Length: 314
Image 1: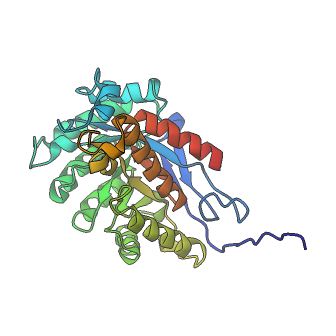
Image 2 (image 1 turned 90 degrees about the vertical axis):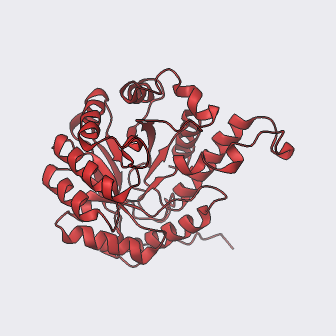
Image 3 (image 1 turned 45 degrees about the vertical axis):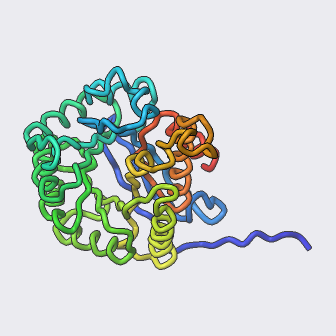
């Protein structure tokens, strides 16, 4: 008896999201099947890797993620240009770590000026990420939206405590928003509804379900993302049909396993850099297989490996 492949056709489809404008525009999402299941439907647009750039770097970063940028690590504009020109970055994610009130506490004017300079210096779309302090992020990202009017940046993350300020300014000045929720399908949907109720179209929202690295909660993220995809495709839930992004670089490189030497843990072997690269790339593949449309990554070797895997899967 001949083998007959079973095909699953879905009534729903993920929305497309445009990031950037003009020659810098990138489109993500648009899939009508579960990840890379081309036998079930359209795969949509190819997932995109955004390379991280920080305005201030944690001194505890391991050498594997300092060495590739050691000549530019104190200059975010030069760093962003190097990512694009030398490492072929398709998108840049500028992390405004120095605006954290518990750190350097730089102000919103500083952030807006830096973001505009980076955006103008690179030939790819720009994403802007806050420090993680919800109150300060609301103030900073609102100012960034105003200063970069019309550039269609991707701004975030917007969370329950600050989404009103961020989404309202994104709407007013022509940007897209990252809607972040704490690893819960219903809360992800609720955030999309709340942001949409402010007037920002669902076509301008991408979801970040909170990302765990390999060995540190990746299975929870995977499960939630898979359920989001199934709700969007199988149940045709329009509130869940926004693309998905994972802020994963920072999670991977703070893992214990990427920092331990072979003297501290002989079974891990001596090549600590290779171990870190694979840790980030393996986390990336997990995210891709659960429905990621955009990945935020750190090490250029991990990025290259991940992009090669994306090409194979597409």
